[in-house]
Structure formats: structure tokens, C-alpha cells
Image (cartoon, rainbow, N blue to C red; front, side, top):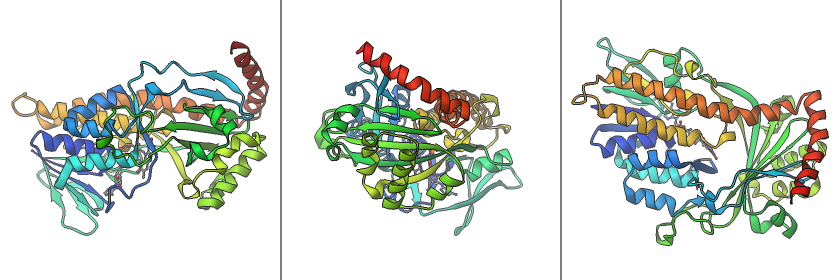
Length: 412
Ligand SMILES: Cc1cc2nc3c(=O)[nH]c(=O)nc-3n(C[C@H](O)[C@H](O)[C@H](O)COP(=O)(O)OP(=O)(O)OC[C@H]3O[C@@H](n4cnc5c(N)ncnc54)[C@H](O)[C@@H]3O)c2cc1C
């Protein structure tokens, strides 16, 4: 069976790696010309995502990934703060958590290595269709169409393959603009290092302002102690942060700014909303070139709304189907799980008695459930941030957070 994959991000490469490993004829096309020259910060892979990854890549690739990953179990419990930096509470104990965080570049480079010369870079798909015999084809901006037994769209949030299948967009703006950056722990004052600790956390304030702080240390907190295999981009304790604001004309204007100008504007915006100066050190001391804006898009949280097309010989996976805001840290893991699930169903084609279309139908049913679950989780934080932007929500946030902070102090 010949499979063409449009998009060599995380899901497309995972699928390509698994197909190649199982002896399928496969080609993965991505418009990027260099897999390492890509955006992104850290990607969280929970136990289920890692187990799916083990199905698609060779054990040695998995070892290199874990030797480059930061283990959640070695982190302190997550924290919740108010805008003054006061502790409101903690997340669950992570000591038994098998999850890891890995640089997106490292994950993508390792997956691309597993796909080998079946990855075709610099190839932009311009559409998909089926010829008169129902054979699916991928059309390109600058090359002849390519035909296959199955075409899979792994082309992300703005997927043209899923749009073709659904007859329109499969997701919408979630109403939040995110701004991310990286700050080395050693660049913070001792007071902030102490407050933030070696853990991730979330601070929410009134009038729609939230700050996620992710702790990444693929050296000190490495998941697999094998320095000779390490290929992490992050080489020391680092906070990857994400500021979130409800979308508005004012946040739209921030999107036009870059580097230091964007960084300074973000600090000003938090300051105007009453955030304590010390909590803004994290933003002010970030690497200015790491600061970037992106819009959150989200598909429906209802599983039945996802992949709203009859199963056929063109399908899609990952963000193309269930675009998920990064607030649950599950989008990449779900794309990898989609890839592993599709492979398992394709194994049933032929000797297993299933036709390709039946295999796709079973795969899409599982993907709808998975997508609905992660979207429900991710949208909780999005709704919380949006709620603080209403008059009532702002008042409630301002009134309750000091009480929660006092209760947290008493508990300590
Ligand atoms: C640049 C970037 C940075 C990201 N950073 C983070 C992050 O820091 N943290 C996080 O949790 N998530 C991040 N994500 C999202 C996360 O990687 C995805 O949610 C997740 O991996 C889902 O994977 P996917 O394969 O469905 O889509 P993606 O990983 O987004 O991959 C889609 C791929 O399709 C390619 N593509 C799109 N259209 C075409 C076309 N017409 N022709 C050929 N190729 C095409 C794109 O170049 C891209 O490589 C990022 C995504 C991108 C693209």
C-alpha cells in the first residue's frame, strides 16, 4: 500500500516513521526546507503519547529522545499564583508521573531521522482530489500531482486536506492571543528563582491576563541519564512562558511587534493590569528573540463534530482535525497517538480482512473521542482566562485571589 502524508510536523512524521518501519511505501511532504529551522518551545509527552511513540520509532530513537527530555517526576508540584505572585495552591504530586517535556525541535529532528529519505522537504501541497477511478492525489504548487492508495493530511491547524474533506475550516480562533518566550533561570534574581522554583505554574489576574510558566531542564532533570545520546536544544534550567490575553484590537496591535518591542509591550500590559513588578521579571529578562505571538485556534469539544466527513481514501489527523490550544499540553501527544492508531488499523487491511476505507473509519472514530477529550481539557483554561475579562469575572478574581493566597499561606 502506498501512503502519502501532507505535512511533516509532529503527527505527519510520526505516521511516516511508523509506516516506513512496517514496510509501507510512504512519502511525507512538508513545505519547510529544514526540520530544525522551525518554531516552537517544549512539547509535553504523557505516558500514552510515549507509548504511541514506541510503536512508531526504533528503540534507539526513543532512548535519544528520553536522554534529551526533562522528566516531570523530577519537578516540584505545579503552583498557582495571583498577579502579586502570592501562592494560591499546588497541583498534584508529580513523583509518579511518567510524562516528559522535550524541545519541539529535538522531537521533530528525531522523527525526521526516523522517516529518512521518505521525507520530502520544500514541497508545498496546493490541494487534494480523487481521479475518475477514486484514486486520491496530492497536488503541489511546483510539481506534478502524486497518487496513492491513501492520502493523510497532517498539515496542522490550517490544514488544506481537512478543509477539503470538511468543506470548510475545522477550527476557529479560541478568542485568546498567546505570547511565548524563554527565560534562563540563572538570569532571574534570587528572589524570583526561589518563588518560581523548579516547577511549572499558572498565574491568573483580573481583566483577562494570565501567565503560564513551564519549567524545562533536560540536563538536570533528564528522563534518561545517557549524556552521550543528548540532543536537547535547551541545555540548562529554563522557563518557557506563555502570556495569554483575550483577543481584542489592542492585542491585535501587539501581534505586529517583534523581539524587544513586543517584550516591552507585554510587560507594560501586565503592569497596567496591576501585576507586581517582581512577577514581570520573567518576561523582562527573556531572550528578546524568543518572544513571539500566536493565536489560539480550537476545534469543537464535541467528539461528534470532529472529522465531519464520511470515511474514504483521504483522511487527516492531529491539529488538522482537532486543533487544540496549548493550554492542556496535549496537542502533539494526541497527534502521535493518532498516527499510532492509524497504523494499527492499517495493519488489519489485507490479511486482517479490513478494506482501507473500513480501517480509516475505525481510526477516525477513535480520533474523534481522543480529540474531544483533549479539547475539553484545553478549553478549561481558555474559558477561565476569558471569564476574568468580564466585569463580574474581574471583580470575582480580584476578590477571591487574596483569600486563596491567605489560605495557601496558612496551609504552609
Ligand atoms: C512552528 C510551530 C511551533 C509550535 N510550537 C509549539 C510549542 O511550543 N508547544 C506546543 O505544545 N505546541 C507547539 N506547536 C503545535 C504542536 O506542534 C502541534 O499542536 C502538534 O504537534 C500537532 O501536530 P500536527 O502534526 O498535527 O501539526 P504540526 O506539528 O503543526 O505540523 C503541521 C505541518 O504541516 C506542514 N504544512 C502545513 N501546510 C502544508 C502544505 N500545504 N504543504 C506542505 N506542508 C504543510 C507545516 O509546515 C507543519 O510542519 C507548534 C506548531 C508549529 C507548526
